[in-house]
Image 1 (tube, rainbow, N blue to C red):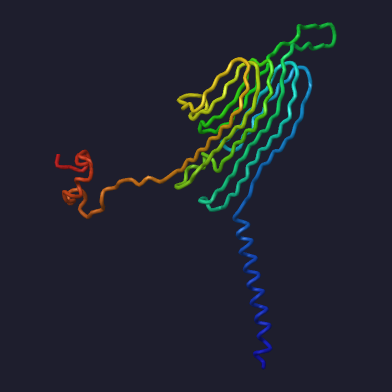
Image 2 (cartoon, helix red, strand yellow):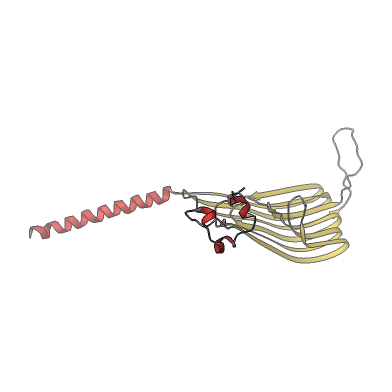
Length: 274
């Protein structure tokens, strides 16, 4: 009877100890993981007449998305921008995760017109005459580039969605079996009077030794509808060096069958008869 009365107490103590152990284990796991993240979200609407200039440069890790727009006359724009970079880093150097995403959605309408600016005082100037220029660039440090640009434009109506995504960083591509991925896409619908260029390239960012995938040039009045998407994955795989077979007597004691699998020049290194 005495043992039966003590049994529930012992069970309660064991459960309590197990709970403490699980709590400590959970704490240890949380301590070994740190989470970092960045998120930028922007919505914008602009409409008016005059001189306009805008520049966006959104970068996250090795990936970048840029857009420029300038000119004089009528300008109307509605845009949405998203930049996010989430990382989970554990104390174990072999475990690293990173997800990157950049997005830009634009609906713009531009019409050129000379614009006169009334300065205060007696200063007067001629009207500002600036044809419209509009360009979007999406790429990464490895030289993957998608771009759409319009220049010397009298009129432009554009609907465009550009996205950049990926996992990992080229700087982290040092440990064996590590990998980095990159993806970019453009969806474009445009009508313009001026010059236009659409391209997709693989190479260095400064333009040297680039492989041209798409290179289109237009001058005049055109309507364009185009979708482009490009992906890249890089992996670092360890290379196994070819070593001489381990043998007690070295090169001199190896038989002919083992020696003939190596280049002839190897004999010059190990032959000390000279």
